[in-house]
Image (cartoon, rainbow, N blue to C red):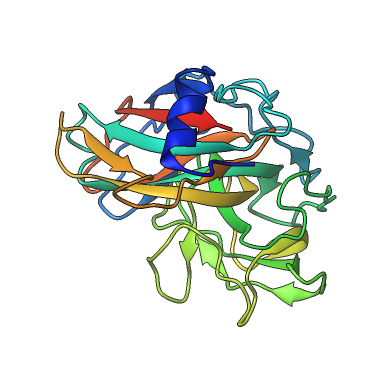
Length: 287
């Protein structure tokens, strides 16, 4: 349903109590320093909520949702109502993280424990349970088992948002050899850039991934995850809160669908050391 007016929003979150302030406090699990410009996902970081286990049967896709162990609690299902992010706050007391850009995502599917040397793991897809057309769904590749002294290049074949199979994504690789856990692969053609796997020209999303090719290899494992980006917030300085108002400042009120598995991915702006801290809070309302 959403909100028909500001008065309706105020009534829903005050009189009807349809409001939740959801805290997120994470500690990075990278065993060695990261560096400015690199992306990391925070789903497998420790803290509150607890780390999500991204290992499993190699290549067998697992659907992620709010019942997944370690999922961020955002108020549960709201039935006929729709839930929206009213505002977000983010900060870090760790100098190695800031300045930074954080993207809030709904994590949909995990293809776990992919080998990055030798014969690629066989992928067994599972259907999306949210954003089922694949429209707007992106792929990220995260280091789970720390990589050896090489930068393995992976190329994925996927089904796009229109149901067309056999599309080939741009090759991606970790930004450095011996990349630590939670580091995201980046586009091999540019050597940097955003956190998402580069889709074929004209594609707007991914329904599933069928296979991957491995050009170079090393020890370690990675997870391929399908995510739906929801919102973005910058972090400007250490111990300084950044806040984004999605009603007045940026009138989008991003929707959090029932079953969402929320988490942040972050591009760090300095030398992020082990056990760095990232804090955030979402204000959520529904009606």
